[in-house]
Amino acid sequence: MPIQNFLRGASVAVLWLWLTCKPALADLPTVEPPASGGGAGLMGQIKGYLQDAIVLGGLIAAAVAFINVALAAIQTFSEVRNEKATWSKFGAIIVVGVVLLVTVIWLVGKSASIIL
Image: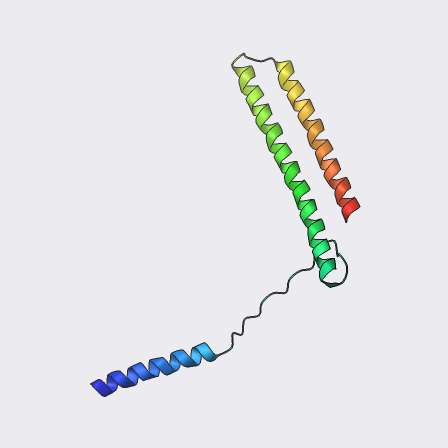
């Protein structure tokens, strides 16, 4: 019995050692270059990634503006239903919100075309 336990332990140890010494054959994906190109070299890539980050920040700003307009419209509609506000206030919130969203989206698109 002790020899069988020793052989079993030794074979497990050899198998473990063999598996840990094998090279990993994972085919890792390549890093995609920035959408704006950015230029050649490391500094060009950093510039490209910063430009992409600025465009992403603009898109996040547009999403935040959309959420704020939606929340204001919902709150004003609730006030209209409770007769604390008028329909004209609700309409004004909607019109101003739409103008705000169109302006923010236009500015994000304009800045993206200037940066890229």
